[in-house]
Length: 260
Image (tube, rainbow, N blue to C red; front, side, top):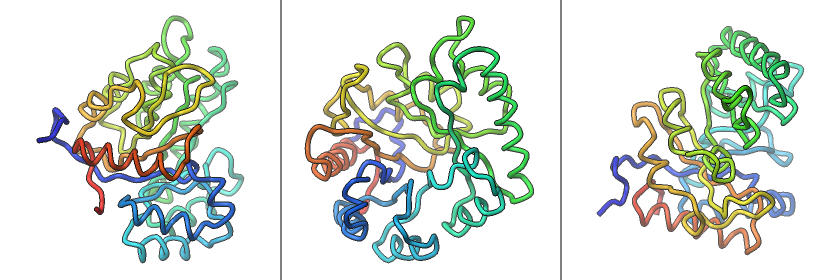
């Protein structure tokens, strides 16, 4: 019986940044292992020398999909046309973006970030692409008594989100599920990770930390949400084991669906 109150089970992907060191050594092996674990998708941050079409074909030959991408981030790329070509070649309709701590350090910086985001949204429209933003914890630091991200969410209504649920918890200062819920109608992806909710501490296999994962999944809008993407930015245990444990936990709890 499902432990998910909503009984909504999105497909499971993994952010390949999680396996960046192993990928630099043998990217083909990493993709093979992920497929054998049962993940339905992968979210690349780097292609390790592969061309986008080659990477997409390899992923699909392994029975998976390119769920989403963190390559290339549009606000770090000088050629938006090239960004559009890469993202479309990967078979996607959304372009990633995100910001550094200084972009949310005060109200002046935030206003510039809001203006930049709107310009990016507008610049992608001729390519029939949408912008989604990925967050860290600093977007949720308070500015004039409110999380900075809330101002951006309200003032740029056409931007979409990949809510990183661990960072949205901001080390226990926020309710991650509530942060997802407030933009659930604009959130097709989420990063699913777990840990002690303590600054400077490593992440752990999903299901073995302090995150309320059932609440996070219950906050998703099934009409909008497409992929649950596992990510461990750092881990003190064997990373392949942690990625497998994360898959096993989420599928056993019937929070996601995989290929196994």
